[in-house]
Image (tube, rainbow, N blue to C red):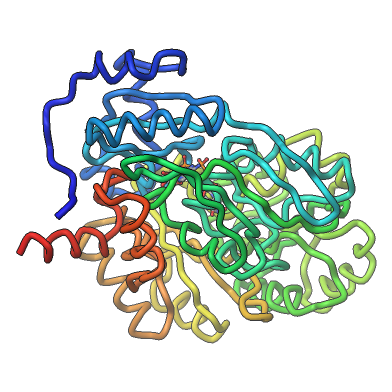
Amino acid sequence: MTSITPQPVDWDVLASELAGIELITEPTQIAKLSLDYYHFSTVLQAKLSDKRGDLVVRPLNEAEVLRVAAACVKHKVPLTVRGAGTGNYGQCIPLNGGVILDTTRMSAIRWIKPGLACVEPGVKLAAFDKQARATGWEMRMAPSTYRTATIGGFIAGGSGGIGSITYGQLRDRGNLHAVRVVTLEDKPRVIGLRGDDVQKVNHAYGTNGIITELEIPLGPAYAWAELIVTFDDFMTAARFGQALGNADGLMKKLISIHAWPIPSYFLALKNYLPDGKHCALLMIAESCLEPFQDLVREYGGQVTYQKTAQEASRGTSLAEFTWNHTTLHARCIDPTLTYLQTFFFTLDRVEKMYHHFGDEVMMHLEFLRSNGQAMPAALQIVRYTTEERLNEIIRYHEEQGASIANPHTYILEDGGMKTVNVEQLKFKEMVDPYGLLNPGKMRAWLERAKSTIA
Ligand SMILES: Cc1cc2nc3c(=O)[nH]c(=O)nc-3n(C[C@H](O)[C@H](O)[C@H](O)COP(=O)(O)OP(=O)(O)OC[C@H]3O[C@@H](n4cnc5c(N)ncnc54)[C@H](O)[C@@H]3O)c2cc1C
């Protein structure tokens, strides 16, 4: 059986084999680069806060990644890839120490063509998007951590975000065209995956290959106006969001709906968010604003904030109050708050849960496109009491037909996926026979290892 056999590691020897590659050995720096935003989850705080890598490597290109991979295989040392470390589930936290491979120096943009681009994994989303927009194209979707996150980290650890109302999620066919990955075999090599084969490593938390290059599709770049619309009643705001999502003639990038008191956490926007009102934070193509106003009127909304794309580009984008930034703002005011990630599928279910949980689970909807339909998803803010209560809340949602992508676990399959991804497991068996890549995160691998031992 091939599996990771713990053995003493001579870090000086390993480091000397990596001569010429940038290394970080200073403990405070290593500690910082070992963690991510796992602390959004009270449950994960207790499990992950003391986890540390032993050495950080910062390769400049694929050739250096191959050298790092070879050294890790030779010494049987775990290797965890890190982009910007903004993941929320401890995805890039090394559970068993070892090498942290920081990709942020691999930030080349190889080419941008109409509708498609090729990049290295460490490029920051905003930096890349700026260049793409100069050609009339833009990233199809981005997380609200757009300014700091890397493309490799978004693909390996994220799911979707601003833009998902038009293009769906990263896992949807067509939202990732190709990747190159470095393996952790006895002789590490580079494998190119295209088409459906990319799903082998898409959202796999870096457990089955180090992504060194990606081809990603682009969408036409619109001038996105930013608006806040307020409503007296939450369900009217939610229905407005659904109607806007369904409105095929209106170009939009963001439909984020917040039940009061969530708007009270957005301190920087307080002049536009009257007490007790529910709000929609929106990005709408400037060219669609006239017909958009008619929709606002139909639902009795009040536009309290409106910026052109150019004005919006000078300050903080409304996007930075949406998706998981909503949780960030809420936790700045009350650090005991945590969150859930839910697919409600229908507004009836949203309404039922809104009334059932009241203030304990505050409703924050993000509309996205799923199988061609606009659908209410959510990152609700939860008043955390105990893990048992949190699990009870999750169970109740599931019993009522909602699907929860549990953000309180670092195990890949226990989050959104729910089942073992056989393709990803098979790929891992081939490219990472010693189980060195981000160990402890893929349940299928852990269970396979257990059954091999038995
Ligand atoms: C406030 C806040 C808001 C957020 N909003 C969103 C959102 O709207 N949508 C969303 O999807 N996520 C969101 N996230 C989560 C996260 O920011 C994004 O998914 C982001 O794109 C991750 O990028 P990163 O560079 O920080 O990745 P990291 O956190 O560094 O890594 C994420 C995972 O990818 C792996 N990985 C990184 N690079 C590679 C590589 N080259 N090869 C193989 N594996 C790799 C890591 O091992 C890890 O498992 C949010 C997080 C925060 C804190």
